[in-house]
Length: 133
Image 1 (tube, rainbow, N blue to C red):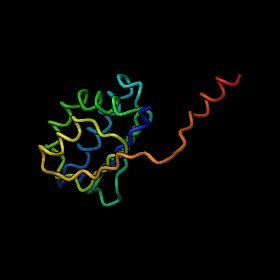
Image 2: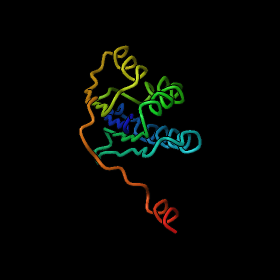
Image 3: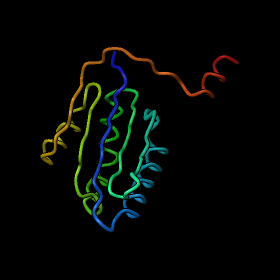
Image 4: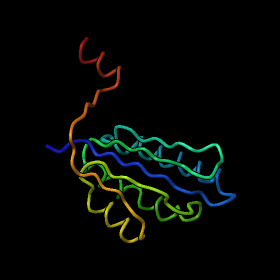
């Protein structure tokens, strides 16, 4: 059985492009919200210095990440406008080929932790209420 796939990445934002970066993050969130039902968590966080943004993704499985890579490929191509570099990325679970290939093509490192050891995934509170009612 395939477990959840988690991807965490931090990006350095080009000087003077922070607001543009935030708008791009919001646009990707809207796309994910409407077209990726197997994305369990998709969040962006920005630092106080307005220099870095971190993305946290929790997918139901590796296939969900594969789908995500295809869906956001256009956004990734345009991210060079505001993205300076990736300062750190980690794939937790069996990383799909498209993700590994993207990192190889960009020459950026991807820390990989493919072996799931143990964990708990809980449904949102409203889901629990709906299934126990």
